[in-house]
Amino acid sequence: MTSQDDLRSCYAPPMERARLKTLRRLDQHCRRFIELSPFLCLGTSGEEGADVSPRGDAPGFVRVLDEATLAIPDWPGNNRLDSLSNIVTNPQVGMLFLIPGVEETLRVNGDAAITRDPEVLALWNVNGKEPRSALVVAVREAYLHCGKALIRSRLWREESKVDRSALPSFGRMLKDQIETGDTAEEIEASVAEAYAKRLY
Image 1 (cartoon, rainbow, N blue to C red):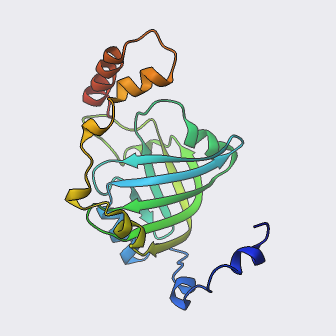
Image 2: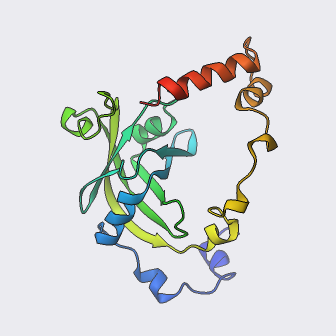
């Protein structure tokens, strides 16, 4: 398909409520959803292309500053800075908020800026540590997304959990994928130490 007309010809028109549900601000339901969410997927796009990155912490880690502004901490990761590098060149972001056990999701789109403002970073403090930077997102669109995808995936069902032994260890997979002098066991030990000591 090469045009919007080609695409639309294969689908029925959207329901009226699907067209009308987009908000330009965060109402009380969006705010409550964000307060309860411990996890979001952050979509960005830059010169290298598109990227999606996970962000997670205790529920409410994303702060609602006002009805049109969110703040997200950037806690320690792998220092590739894929999302942040994209935002430097293209501030447009998309976010998908999830709440364990809830089949609906919340989608928020907007424009992000990276800040090191001490007043913003002070919004988070874990064992005396603050994030190195934070994203401040000006909300352009916010809307609830129905639960069909999560229902089909059975994501929150206990019987859907995959036993960890179905995959090799993280260290084994990395060892197979990259050229490194480290053994799989050494990679595992390094990752375990990071999980234990460098989450924040």
